[in-house]
Image 1 (spheres, one colour):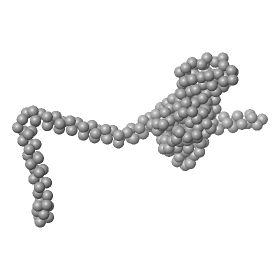
Image 2 (cartoon, helix red, strand yellow):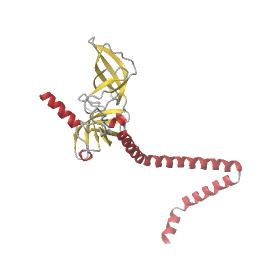
Image 3 (cartoon, helix red, strand yellow):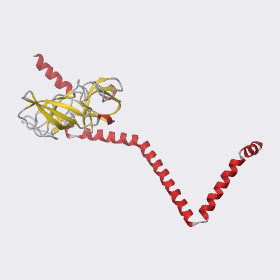
Image 4 (cartoon, helix red, strand yellow):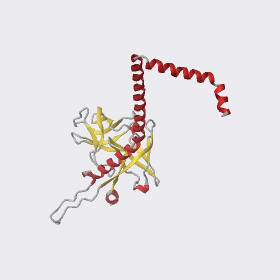
Length: 275
């Protein structure tokens, strides 16, 4: 009690000021309809502002959970794609049900580190050997291809980004089917170069560039980008500038593609080369 009296004596001027202010505001608000209406409007505005801030904060805090849910759903849909299965057709020797063994398996992962403005760009994702990931597996996002697995640990892996001159992919023009190697030439974070397209091919601005399906890394017809420029190089081949579809500066969730027949294909091809 003594401490309370000491506090009141020490701050009595401030306490009286606050009390008089409250009394004055109460008189102003309650003695006139205009003042009461303005006070009510100000209170409502403040209440709405606080409510919006609280709601935005709640939405932000739930964003991580929602992104994770969407990534899981995307992964499920990728694994249900028709292109994920290899169809065995009935021939004259076999008369039974067709089998559709899984050709590609998709593993969802989160990007935890990424670079876009270096000469050799890489990204790190939170899945590794324990999740079935191996080197030279393709990596995509919802907007298109983003790179290839370079090195793997038990729980993480480093991805060779498409924005790296050491990475290349076989790409084709959607309208004509002409294909060639596509790689990044250190020009910008949203453009790559498609080469070796013959001069008699018809090139149209805005045409879609897709994966050709050659090799064992990417399935056919995955989005890469669109044609933004082109020129003849040496008179015989086109050099085509491709505006990449993925936004590499905003990558968050990706899918790693596991080709279940890759070892068999590569072993067979190596045997043929050795013979």
